[in-house]
Image 1 (cartoon, rainbow, N blue to C red):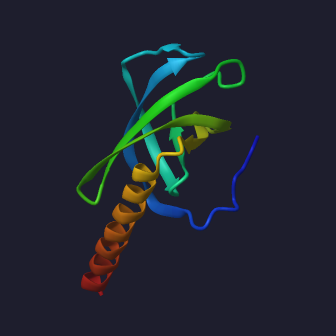
Image 2: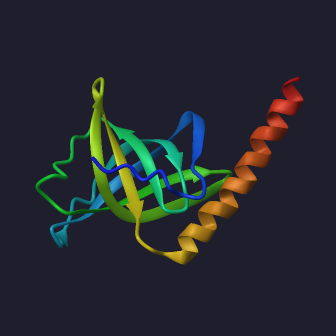
Length: 127
């Protein structure tokens, strides 16, 4: 397993964010168009850690995935590859690295800023 912890920042959600993923390609061949559930645990501009009940054989195949989720009223799509996986109960946890898309990285940073402000304001209003 490869863990990438040298990033500038990684935002961990208190509760996982619901999203989906679909297989764009397997070993360079067009993949399945069906979506599967993804629970986004944390995110950085370079990658995502997510849980899913789906066991992808990433040790034997090269997957290209598209992860989609709604955050701060913005719909985010990230293309990339799963780099590692581990089991957690009946779920699989994946480390996913996005393709080096500067626009997507910028969008993730901007949306996380908005989301952080929203969460901060909600917690102030509850006090």
